[in-house]
Image 1 (cartoon, helix red, strand yellow):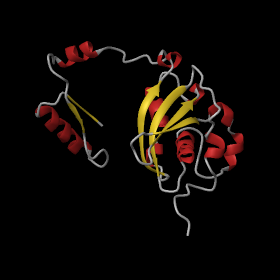
Image 2 (cartoon, rainbow, N blue to C red):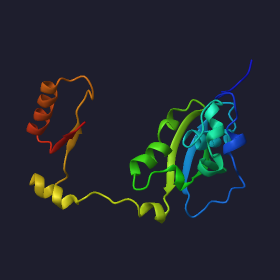
Image 3 (tube, rainbow, N blue to C red):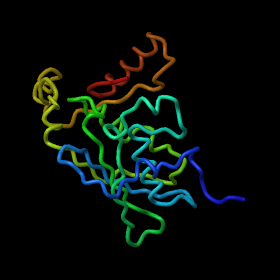
Image 4 (cartoon, rainbow, N blue to C red):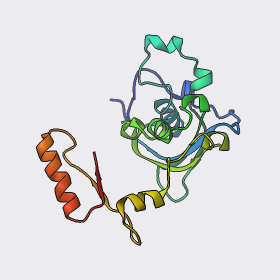
Length: 194
């Protein structure tokens, strides 16, 4: 009987573990604390994070041949043991800017910290650090106005603004959704969101 976890039909480290890669000033660099499942080598775990958060998938698909991997793939370029922690590693991953939409923090974080956190080859995964190059940061326009405008619109000063998310996010009728919003605002919250 085999021990450990086998993610799919191909090893990620063959494509996504690139210890000779020299990072570029334009790369987004991420440091992940990785705890692999038993039997999964740290290089495979780091490569799996790079793959699943960029161009990889668990199996070979016909569109693999249509993808310019060298241009778009995330690369696990270094693995370090976490001193004093059993079976924990820091996996350093470089992402090319071409993977991300300019000016979209949401797109960047959805890609880097999206579904990879549910990946079965890993017992645990945590984003420890992220370096965003200035050339990409400058594309973020920020909100159209600042907190002062929001406070002026709400006539709320001298305290944090408090809000909530209406639950369940689906299934409420318009009337019941409105009732939930009303009760939140009546109870003292400043805003609600869905």
